[in-house]
Amino acid sequence: MKILVINSGSSSLKFQVIDSESEKVLVKGLCERIGIDGSFTYKTDKVSVKEPVAMKNHTDAVNTLLNALIDSEKGIISDFSQIDVIGHRLVHGGEKFTGSVVVTDEVIQAMTECNDLAPLHNPANLVGVDACRKLMPDTLMVGVFDTAFNQTMEPKAYLYGLPYRYYEKYKIRRYGFHGISHKYVSQRAAEFMGQDLWHVKTIVCHLGNGASISAVKYGRVVDNSMGFTPLEGLVMGTRCGDVDPGALEFLAKKENLDFSQIMAILNQESGVLGISKNFSSDFRELKDAEIKYNEKAALAREIFAYKVAKYVGSYAAAMNGVDNIVFTAGVGENDSDIRQEICSYLEFLGITIDELKNRDQGEAVKISDSASRVNVLVIRTNEELEIAREAAEVARQAAG
Ligand code: ADP
Image (tube, rainbow, N blue to C red; front, side, top):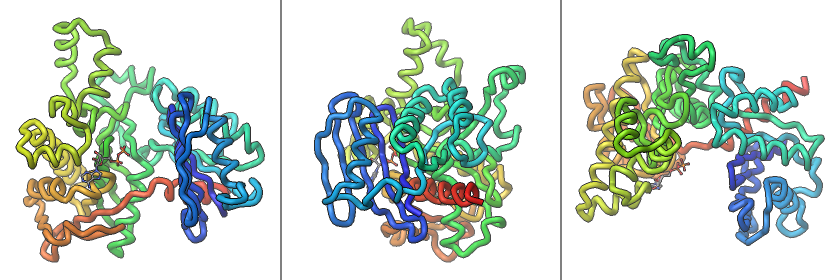
């Protein structure tokens, strides 16, 4: 099957076409600056283009990518019927969606009801779904949710210490995010180590611009560091992670700020960017600055690593043990110094790192040495492949 994977954001739309049997990526690309001026990137084995293309809206963006797919020079198919399924990344499925589903009018209605829970992401996802339905009305669409894998969390993990009535009334609870990545990486780790997924305890550290940690016990998520929104948990690129709400009331009064101003600070001005006094949210730039004795850049990286280590320690307790700790995403896959620093806090778990292996690059690398009591791995995440796999599976089930 050929699966078109769509990840639609507010002004960008990433796409890939993946052959589900060989799992080969046939095309990958990106529509950017939708509604502004428009830029289109498209790559296959044979061609690589980046060109300005005016895109007023997401329908224009989907139109642009579909036309490229059937183009006589750069295309990979001769007509749209060769796309068997479209798999959409959908951020928030609330409590309703515990797995991937065929996108129907009812699913769109249910997702629209979740818009309040993820006002930045869900409407943008739905615009992408809508554009595809307009242009390819006969193609099966599958929704793959970033929250679904985390839906196995128990109430003791997902409830806040708030009055229970707010959970009943508004579903205020922890949902956890990055589920597509946590699922792919935890399963790939077990496969790479030759383990039975249903007998291993894995902690996945998804450390990118947005960062989260999950505890996956016997294939099921026990906990995830993100909460009601992707703001909770680790210190991230620009997001604050865990903060005492009392500090926010104090800040609002001192600076005369309203809630939306406070939220903008927490989402866009905090994290390592804020700690480094606006030096950068980019971990590479922070590392370069640290080498040049920028104290705040060094402090930002130190706080980031400390917080990751604390979550790993608490998740080892949540699962009463851990077999694998896996680093993934931009920082987790590439920053060997941060990995080393995080692991230095974890010696009490019997973790020892092979410094040479920690510098290796690859799709999957074991960086712990043979004496280590826990396997420490670096695995490249592949959310698009996970979406394609889920979409193919749902399509097979739908076909009976
Ligand atoms: P997201 O998908 O959340 O935007 P990514 O997973 O792409 O984020 O991660 C982006 C982060 O990864 C950036 O802070 C970037 O600096 C960092 N990163 C990428 N490559 C390296 C590297 N070689 N060393 C350190 N950090 C890196």
